[in-house]
Length: 100
Image 1 (cartoon, rainbow, N blue to C red):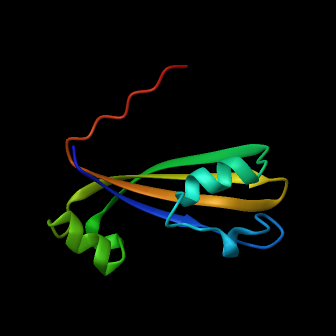
Image 2: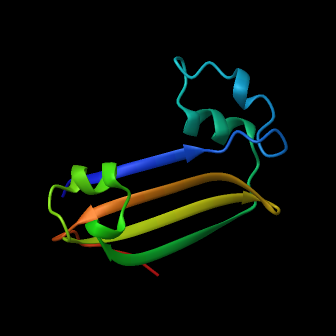
């Protein structure tokens, strides 16, 4: 199923010193952060919403006004500082599988 992935790398100086100077044409933000920042815990939130509740550009990408979507938000932390935040939106028909 097609998903729309919105990734925000929070290049806060205390969380990711040097991020603003990283050559992101050579290495992706995720690769740079993985190699240069030690995160020590993470959080994940899974929720259901509909496209009418999303920012306009996301709702338009999902193509169906008011359609149900699954939202997964993941944050990696270095102590009390958020290092990265990722939000993924999945259209109707997506299945989330997990092993515990």
